[in-house]
Image 1 (cartoon, one colour):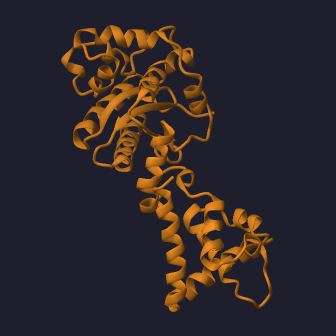
Image 2 (image 1 turned 135 degrees about the vertical axis):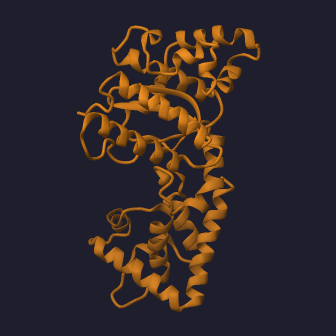
Image 3 (image 1 turned 90 degrees about the vertical axis):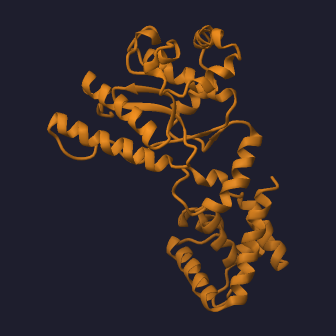
Length: 306
C-alpha cells in the first residue's frame, strides 16, 4: 500500500503554492492537477523541455517542507515519476476530465465540485486567483466562444471517461505516447536518434526500431541470411552476428538476458563479453567502426520514414 504524501489541508495547500511558484519560475504550464492522499496527477506543458528539472524541484522542495512540518526525515516519493507525452488533440480533453474525476472515482466525493484539491474549480471560475492555471488552451478546444466555455467544460465533465484512457492509467506500465499513430511516428522520427541513450524518456524502447528492422539492416549490409546471425562457432569472429548483438543493445536497450535468448546464447555474461569485445575492436579498427556506424545510421534514418 502507498503511504499518504498529504496528511492534511496544510500539506495540500503547500503543494498548490509550490505548484504556482514552479509554474512561474520554470515556465511550467500547469493545465490540470489533482492531489490525492497518496499521489498526484499533473497535466503540464514544458516549452523549455525541462520536465525532469521541474519534477526534481517540485518533489524535492515539497519533501523538505513536509519533513519540516511533520518532524520526519527521508524521501517521500518512491522512484521516478511516471509520464506520458500527449498530442495536442482530443486526448487532452479526455485527460483533463480523467484527472478531475479522480476523487469521484476513488470514492472521496460524489461530485468533482466537492473536491478542494484539484484544478476543477479553476475551470468553473473566472476569478483572478486562477489566472496562473493554463486552462484557456483547453477551453478553446471546446469552443471558440469565450462566453460559452464554462458551459462547454461542464458538458465535458458530464460525459463518461473513455475506457481506453482509464485502462492506460489503471495499468502499471504506461505507454510513452498518447495520440494518433501519426503523432507516435513523428516522435520516433524526431527524437529517437537523439535520445536513445538518455534516461529522460520513460519506456524509450517503444520508440526503438523493431528487432526485425535491425536484423534486416545487418543482413543487407553484410550480404548474409538472418539464420547466419544465430550461429556461433568457437574461435570464429562472426562480425555480422556480433554487430547485431551490439545494435540490439545500443538501439533497443535490451537486457542481456533478452538478447541472449534471441541469439541462442545461454549465459548473459557471454552476451556482455561479445558487446565489450566488439566495442574494444571498434576503438582500434576504424574500418570496423565505420561499418557498424553505417548500419546504425541507416536504421536511424529509416525511423524517419516510418
